[in-house]
Image 1 (tube, rainbow, N blue to C red):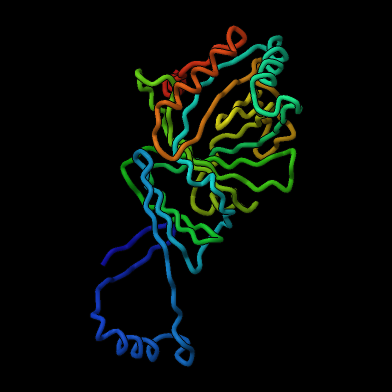
Image 2 (image 1 turned 180 degrees about the vertical axis):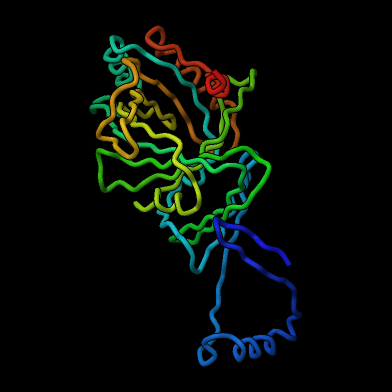
Length: 291
């Protein structure tokens, strides 16, 4: 017999198998032994997919009951890899950079889009995450492992109250010297607005939060953002956000379902058009975290 821990709960269970010829007799016996004997037994049909991201496992399976989070399905959920470059630009050069991007990117006749996002980082130490989801809900089971801490990000728009929350997993960046950009795993789904409560119920702890305020461009499949990172005065007080500095973070990213390093060259080529206003590089975030 085994026990699986989830928060302060334990699940005791036994497993076995039965031949096809004995299933009918077993079902009749269970109907007599179990609750709701006068009703017909319930049926289920589950689809299960196992995804691996670095040292963490994401386990998707539909559930009948338990803590759940509603998920809005979209094609973007299939995107698993993100190529990207980052850099910074001073306040005095932002206007010139925006004008150049308007000329280079799609929809040049339109004004650039702006965004104001609040992002909260939650951490759970030494765990493997199992995501169980059906068409309309998602369930997470957590158990201990020897892997590093895992972080999930909850993001929502402060500009558009009707926009769904985003649950994001961002993996460690791969710094292959032969590749022109960084590469990381990235999973993002739209959810209902009880996302932060859901994560806390699973034992995640609040690690940090910030506000991103800036501009958004599209060039083919590439996404270009120019934004300021804003510090928040207190927990869950995005209205108190103040820019950390006068510099703006510039990022070019491209999502894909399979690794295609030619996409890295596409990003690198586009970044050359932004020089000398901004020089985009492969920034090793692990080195930044150690300093």
